[in-house]
Image (cartoon, rainbow, N blue to C red; front, side):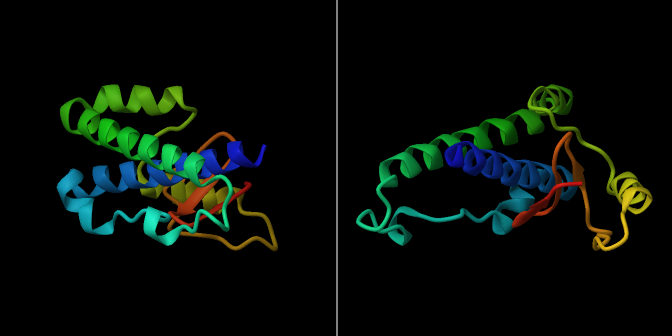
Length: 132
C-alpha cells in the first residue's frame, strides 16, 4: 500500500513537471527547474531495505518523464489524451484558481497557485498534495 502511495506521489510530481514544460514552452525551458527526489548517492542501502526497488522506480520514472516530454513536443493532443488516461487533465491556471476559490472550505488555505486538479487530489506544487 505504501509503495502504491509513493508511486502515485511520484506520478503527481511528474504531472507538475509536464505542466511546467507546457507552461514554459518546452522541455528545454524547464530543465533547470526539474529536480529528482533523491539520487543513488543520497540513499543509504543499509538504512533502506527497498533500495533496489527505489532505483528501479527512479529509472522507470525518468523514462516516463522523457516519453511524456517528447510526446508534448511532438503532439500536445496525444499528450493530453495520455494524461487523461491516467485520470489527469490539463487546464489553464486561471480556471484552476477559479475552481479552487469556489470550492475552498473554511479552515482550508486557499491557493492561487493551484494549477492541476485530479479526480482525487489537487496538486498545488511539486512538493505537496492535499485532498480537496
